[in-house]
Image (cartoon, rainbow, N blue to C red; front, side, top):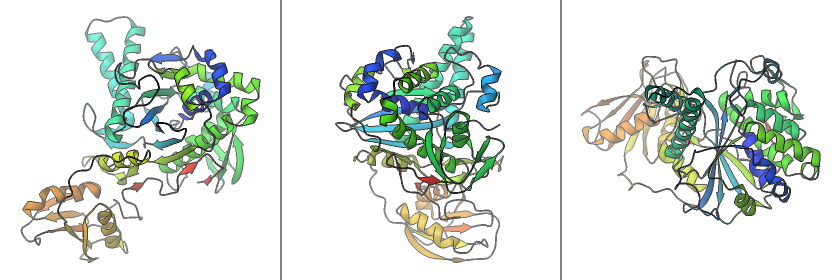
Length: 468
C-alpha cells in the first residue's frame, strides 16, 4: 500500500490557526503540543521573528507514521478507517517550506518532491530517506554507547532524524529553517474533519484501489479518510507523484481558506475540534514561541498563501547504472536556491558567468523534434544553441567535448539526466556535442527541463483550482 505522502497540511492548519485573533485566544490550549530539539539553539529566529535572511522559514514535514503522540501504534480499527497499511514510518513523504518575508503577512510555500536526489551524510540518496538514515544511525550509536533505555533511544533517534531532514532541506534550498512542524496520518484526518472538510475539484473522475480514491469529476468536499485518499493517490494519474504534489497544494490552499473562514473561526465547536486535532500528533521545534508568532501573523488572510514546487531537471532520473529501473527526481541545487530566494524578492549568490559554450544536439532516436527540445533545455541553462538534427540510430546517449571543456561537458551530462561522457579531439573548439539515443528519457522528452516541476501556474488560496 502506498504511503500517504501528503500529510503536512495539518502543519499549515496550525500555522494559519495561530495567526488569528481566535487562535491567540485559544493558544494556551496548545501548550501540550510535543516539542523537540530540531533547531540549533543559536540557529532559530531571534525574538521578534525578523530573521537576518529576510524571511521567517517554516519546514512542514509529513511522516508516514502509524503511531500516536507517545509513539504507540495506532489501533487496528483506526488504521482501517484511515485505509492505511502497517508499513513503517521512517520516510518523510511530504516536505514543504513556508517563506514569510519580514514585515509581511504573505506566505510563499514550496514543495520539495520526496524523491529529490541529493547529497547527504551516508552518500547521495532520495531526500525522504534522510530521516530514516539518521534515525537508524543514532539508535545504533546509542546502543553501542551502552544505552539500554528504549524510550530514551527512540527519542534520540527521532530527534536525529528530524534534524537530518531539516539539514537536507537547508542544504538543497539554501533556506535557513527557523521553525519545524511535523504531523502524521491521524492528525491530518482529524484536522480535515475538525474544519468540516475542504473543497477540491478534479478534472476527471478517478478511482484507485491502492489509495482508496474513488471521486467523481468536478468540485466536491472531502474530509477524514476521503481527504487522505485524495492527497495520497499517485497511481492512475498522468503525472504520478507530481500530480499528487499538485493535489497536496490545492488541498493546502483549501484548508487555509477553510480554517480562516468565518464558518470555522466563529464556531467554538470547530475551534475546539481543531485544537484537539492539532494536539494529538503534531510535533514542533523547541524554539518556536507561538505567542510571538501569533503577534506577527495576526490578520493573515486566506488568499495570502501561494504554493509552488521547486524546479527539477529530470523527473525520471536513472541514478544507479547497476539498477536501471531505479528512478529519482534529479534537481539542480543552484537552480533550487535561486528559486527559493526569488520567492521573497532576493537573489541567491551567483557564480561568475562562464564563457559561452555552443552545444550541438543530434537525435539518434525515433522521437520527433527531440534534438530541438533538448537544445532548448540547455539554452535555458546558459548554453548557446548550435546545430540540431537527426543522425544514425543508436541505443545509448553520449556527451562529447574537447579537453578544455571537460567541466562544462560534465555539466551538460548532468543536466540531461547523467549521460555518458567522452573527451574527444574531434569536437570543434568551443563546442560540446550531444547524441541522444533511443533509450534517452531525460529533459526534453516531453517538453521538460529545469522548470517548476508541475509546469502549471502557482496555486493560491483565493479559490478552488481543478487538478488531475
